[in-house]
Amino acid sequence: MMIVGLTGGIGSGKSTVAKMFKELGIPVYDSDMEAKKLMETSTEVKAAIMDLLGKKAYGKDGLNRSHIADKVFKDPELLQKLNNIVHPAVRKHFLEWANRQKSHYVIQETALIFENNAQDKYDCTILVTAPVETRIKRVMDRDKVEKQAVVDRINNQLKDKQKLDLTDFSIENLELGKTKRKVKELHLKLLALASKF
Ligand code: ATP
Image 1 (cartoon, rainbow, N blue to C red):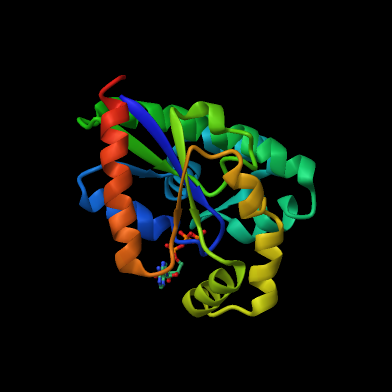
Image 2: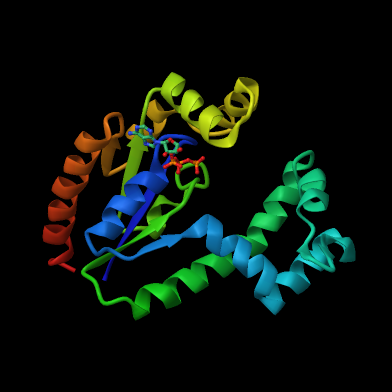
């Protein structure tokens, strides 16, 4: 089974591209969503988070996101420690999921691959790109947020130029019809690659 990592900066269109692969029958694992689920449901993850951030990390409605965000976003070391709990749990859950899939390759969609130096966990990687101005506009429209909030998040990620040096494949996502054709072409390439696994 070949494992493909799919990433791209905020607003590049990762989820849009992931959906196109799904439509071609490829199983896609959404790391962000699964991480949130594991933080709510895994007893081990919950216990480790409470050890790190205190009992207040969970309230009667589950994970207390604002409490956690307040604590970790002003303390990079604490964020690192939280990641050291969540990332291995997601990795284990992903590998178990991947083993159950009947497909020549599977995709793991993850916001930060190169930023976390995690590219070695994949047989190959796909980077989705779009110009920064386009990405800002998309996210402002989608999330109804101010420009500065998007710019701040973009500045926390590596630039496309740096990531393009590190990725095996890239898809520039501008016009949706063109993107779909690029996804189909890449899908064929990946099937050919996967047959060697
Ligand atoms: P995030 O990192 O914030 O999760 P993402 O990279 O997954 O973002 P998407 O959610 O796929 O990006 O796309 C961001 C927004 O831009 C969505 O509202 C989506 O519908 C829109 N979008 C994506 N691709 C295109 C495109 N080629 N043309 C127009 N709109 C697009």
